[in-house]
Length: 242
Length: 273
Image (tube, rainbow over all chains, first blue to last red; front, side, top):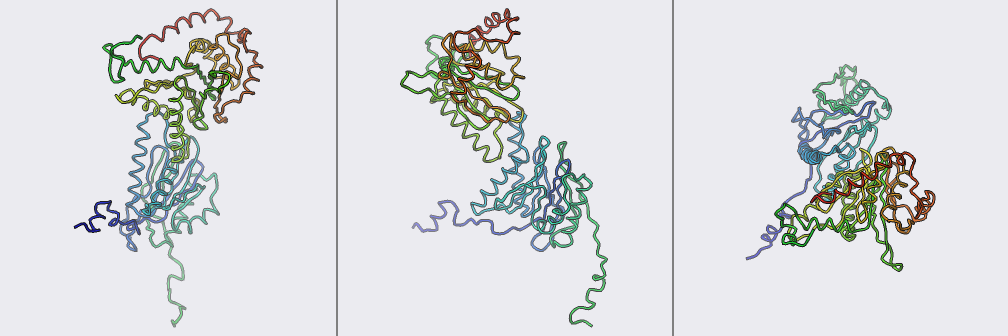
């Protein structure tokens, strides 16, 4: 007896498989800025499971080939999948063995195609990516979202970073920031996010990429300040108190 | 090369280790009308002889734009050349779509060579009967490659293929040392001279040749007939007049006959181009 059940099993498991509906373990904001010698990127090391901060040593900044750096927010497992795609991409690029190499612009565009294609299949990689790098003296910084929206800018951020960090960057970013100034600026943004983003954790890394190469810092924490008068006796003068 | 019992299939080796079908394919290239290429540090010029079958017909198209930064000149079976040009255009456009960046010439040439090699190792295929001079620009500068039906490819400072290409090669061998530093216009001039060599006394006009240029700041483009004719007139190199060589080569004119003698031998070795 041929039932419609059999039919759907014989054809692909189209009826059974589901598309990605929502993310599970997520990373929060990534911020990237251009500075005098290259690109600086910052991200914390948190992996949230909903409202629980489940993982606190997630590396969300990674090297890609010789010239690029990627930072990701969103679903961590999808980021790991993207890293596998990029690994294969760079591998094949190296296998040509011909002195040509993919630069940050090429990697950014490749990622855009991947993200957009997945979005068209209603099965997105649930990430917002920041892609930065330097090749032949040219600095490049771009961003791709899970639906394939992509652009380049002097400073980019994902998630909450767009709302909390970019206004600071719009005021204080300059073309000729030194490395120290850049780090200070990023820390200012990250501190802001730490105060205001509930999925932020106080353990972050800063990555620097220049023509010479890439370094990702050891994890460290920011100093925070809670000594506000209003926090000392928060209920004084509150509605309904005496 | 004579007809023998090892030349029916491309997948049959001869006892001497030759694949005759592949060598016959390379003969087809030698029978086609001449195409030459030369490059400097910043520009590459392609030129070819374009003879129409009769006054009534149009010219064979032998130079194809593959992308803004790559062009190709062919000699041999032009139909095969057209198909390969379409493949090259496809590869360039797909790479550009994925990476927002021009496909490096070196990679395109390797892909082309691998494609040609496949046809030398399948019993149901035949080798492409066309030689391609690929001119292109990438991050590392200007490049000129020659792709051969055997699947081999080489990079050149200057090269000529097709019938009576030896005359052009002789001319290029005399002049190639100064090509690296040549200006764009000098390169075009040398290309026209080289073409004239292959015409063996026939009048050089823009009706029988085609010139194309690609360079830093200049997308690959085929020069129109009027421009070419103007250049020919300007350089006074049409027809009977003696080659308007710069003085220096005249002094070392003694060296030229030796070089042409040595160059003539190179056709003999099998699988060698």
